Length: 98
Picture 1 (cartoon, rainbow, N blue to C red):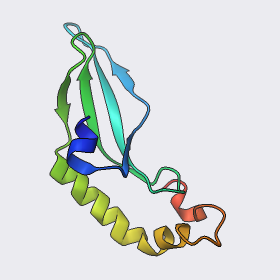
Picture 2: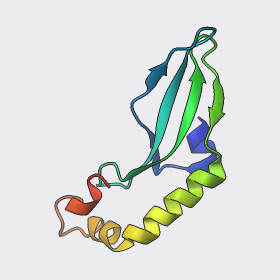
Picture 3: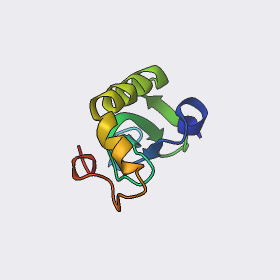
Picture 4: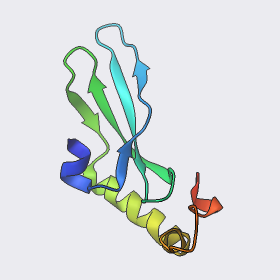
């Protein structure tokens, strides 16, 4: 898959949204940054899939998604570190949806 190949296991596909066009419809799929033990952190990009062909036709560049993920990590690294603490039952409240 596109996400695995370029950006690894911390990204997940969100809920697709169908976008109808007169000639051809597409699905816009948000790319979301996640961390083990945490819920969604934030959207870092999109992937657009042609409905008829089932092919990826547009996307946020892997470099832009990586930069957005790095920026989010830097902003929230203390909370993310806490989420990996075995004494903590859940991801910190601030990371559940930013």
